[in-house]
Image (cartoon, rainbow, N blue to C red):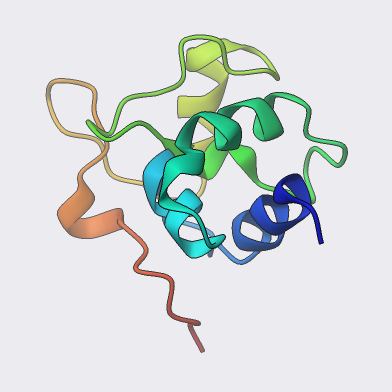
Length: 105
C-alpha cells in the first residue's frame, strides 16, 4: 500500500464530529514525517464525501487555507454541521473534538 492509500485509510476512520491534525494522520499512517504528504494527499482526495478530508486541521486547530473543496469557510461549515466545537479565536476545541485514533462504538 502506498503512502496516499495509507493516509486515506486513516482519514476514512475519523468519526463524525471529531478532527485530527496532519501530523497525527502521518503518525497513524506509519510515518511521522508525512505531515506534508497528508496535505498533498487530501488535496487530491479521489473520493470527496467518502474520505472526510475536512476532518483534518493544522496543529493549531485551524482550517486549511487552501481547503480543496471550497476553502476554509466550507471546511468549517462541514465541521460545524457534524457538531465540531470551535473556540472564540476560530480554532477547533481540541479538548472536545480531537480524535485519538481509537475506534468508537
